[in-house]
Image (cartoon, rainbow, N blue to C red; front, side):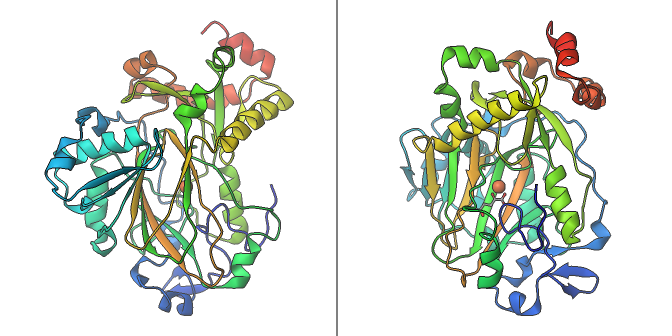
Length: 400
Ligand SMILES: O=C(O)CCC(=O)C(=O)O
Ligand SMILES: [Fe+2]
C-alpha cells in the first residue's frame, strides 16, 4: 500500500491535511469550503475529543426487520396512492417515488427492510431526510440495528454516527485522485472488517452536480454464476477483513481514530438469513487473505473472485443521483463503488447512516446455533487462527 499526502482512501471521506480549518478544537474543512455548501451543518468534521472514545460493538443478537416484512410490500404500496416502483434491471435494483421515508410507520419500515433486501438496492426520490434533525434521522435508522460509528470518516459535529462523503469544489484536490491510479473504482462492502458488518445502509445526497453515480453489484448473482464444483471448493473458506490500511492512511494524514483498527474473520460464502440464499462475501478493499492458503494461492483466488465480480456488469446497476435522492442498500448482499467522473469544480456532498446486522454465517445451521457467548469465545481465538501456518490451519480445522 502506498501512503501519499492528500490521497483520499476510496471516496472523499477521510481527513486530509488540506482540512486544516478548525471550529474550536474540532477539525473541519476550510471556511471557504464550508461557506460554499448548501448544507453547512453537514460539513465533515473530526473531533479530537472522540479520538479512541469508541469501541467496536460487542456481539449482539441481530433481529432482522426484514423477517417481519410482507413480501407483497402492501403497506408501502397501498398507503401511498401515488407510489411508483420501477425496476432498474430484471433481478436487481429498484427506483421508488411517492413514499416519504421519514414518515413511515414501523409496519412500513419492516416492509421496507424486506424490499431493500429483496431488490438489493433501492433509490427513493424526493426525500426530506436531509432537512430533519440529526437525532431524528438516527432514531429512524436505529430501528434496523445499532448504528456504526466510523473510525476515521468526517461527521457533523457531535454526531459521529453519520459518515460524510464530500468532494470539494477544487480541481487540484480532485486531480490528486488520479495522480497514481488509472481509475478510482473500488468495489467494496462498507466496513466489512467489523465483527457484525452492516445490513440496511442509507445514503442520502445533499448536494451534487452531474455524475458521481453509485454503482452496485448483486453478490447473489455473482455466486450463482460459479460452477457447482467451484462452489464446492469455496465452501468452508474463511477470509480476513481488515481496517488496518484505512487506519494507516488516516494516521499518515494526521486524522483522528474514533476506534482502534479491527480485523475479523468472515466466511467467503455467506448465508442471508432473511432471503435464505448464499452469496459471495469478498471485496477488493477490505478482504485481505484466505485463511489456510499460501500467499500466492490466496492472492490468486481473491484476484479471480474480485475480477469475476468486477467484470459481471451483467449483474450490476448504477444509480444516478439528484439532490433529494436517498438510496438504501443491503450491505451484505451487494458490493458498491463510487464513480469519480464529476466535473472537478462541482461539490458532491452526501451522508451515510449504517445499521449493523448479524455476524456473517455460512449456512442456516450456524445462524440458528449462534450465541453472543460463543461469539466472545470465537473472537478470543481470532489471533490464534491468524497466526497459524497453512499446514497448522489445515490440521486444526479440516475436521470441523
Ligand atoms: O460516493 C459514493 O457514491 C459511494 C461512497 C462510498 O462507497 C462510501 O463512502 O463508502
Ligand atoms: Fe461505501
